[in-house]
Amino acid sequence: MLSCLVRALYGDLPHEQLVQASFFSLLLCMIVGVYWMMRSLKDSVFATTVGLEYQPTAKMLSLVVVTVMLFFYNKLVDMVPRDQLFKVICCGYSGVFLATAFVLQSSTHGLYGSDGKALPASPDRLVGWVHYFAIESYGSLVVSLFWQYTNSQMNLKEAKAQYGLIVAGGQVGAISGCTLVVSSKTFGVAELYYFGGLLTLTPPIIVYFYLKRFPPIVALSSAPGAAAKRVAPGFLEGLRLLFRHPYVLGIFAVSALFEVIATILDYQMKVLGKASHNSTADFASFMGQFGQATNSVSLIFSVVGTSFVIRNLGLRLTLMLFPAMLVVVIALVYCSPSMHVLFWVMVTIKALSYALNNPSKEMLYMVTTDSIKFKAKSWIDVFGGRASKAMGSVVTNAFKKPVSALMLYGSLISLAIACGLLLVTSLLGRAFERLSTTEQLIGMDGPSTDEEVQSLTETDEQDDAEAPLRKN
Image (cartoon, rainbow, N blue to C red; front, side, top):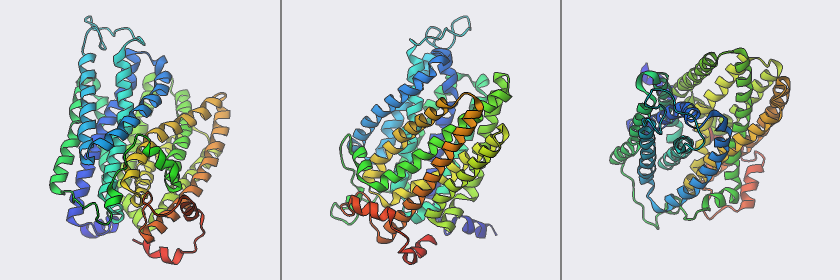
């Protein structure tokens, strides 16, 4: 009975693939667990050390800081073997987190003075800015690195079977990280930073044992496929690849357009939620319930639904399913703009974004070279994600008063973007299926830009040839 259930949910999952999925699930659990723990502490520590009124400035500066770090990251990819990237990056962040913990315990530069009272907040307190930028960049770079590495280790069939289990590990980490912060009064804020700094050292250890269990196959430079594994050097190589290939721009659109919608809906929910909860503690409890509900729904769906849906619907329909759902729930918000409706709408789209949309979006990289997986993807995930959130903030800032205008125009703009996203996912999914059928890789010397555009915009003339692929 159990074996039949596993086969129905994940297909034929051999023991070796289950072990491989377990490694990546544990790796994502540690990365996401550290991020959610640090993220939950970030705003409160920043407010205590620097001042909450400087948070908008910090958000704007974080885009600049992360962009600069992207240039260094792209150079690092040129210099360091891919399996060693976790060691270099995670050790660096571990040092920053441990140093932050040490400073936060200081009675002159930390959170509290020798009398036990909070030290006055000041924009001159460097520790507040450094820890804020470190956590922001960690969440962008290290999570992106995880998917870059994972995508380079699997083929499409393996990804369809394993990604649900892998995402489930990330959700376990998210729930665990948030739970630790709830007990911050018991453990202490600085102590949690120490713990986070030590946990940040675990990803390189997991990768080390993974490579012991699954040694990399060293291919000759003349071997077929070896060129696809080479990463082209250059600071701006990722941007060049992004603008050179319409298929990669399509992935950028899929990533960025949803973030614009999510930013608008999230702000709408928080405005109505704040209006319904008078005290800070009540509103914090409301947001805590939102986090618990989102991660719980995402965990359940990733275990029982992710692989099942992708394998049975195929990647194109799965990609289209998410924006189609967005159209429905945004229309619901437009017709009934209440706090409870927005709460469950945000739980739904956030949970399915983590458990379904993100894994299917990652599979789009299966038909690209490693240069695109490691360099262009870093720009898409890190810079694109932050830029799209900034665009969403422009919308919410323009219509934030009165609340009725925010509900009306915010919903209409979100609906228009969701319809555009539905079209992009349809075209991108069709291009993916054709590339998979012909075994072409984007980024290799092959299809020209014009041919890629044609592949994205052609009608379904090859549906009969693509039908078997959809059933894989």
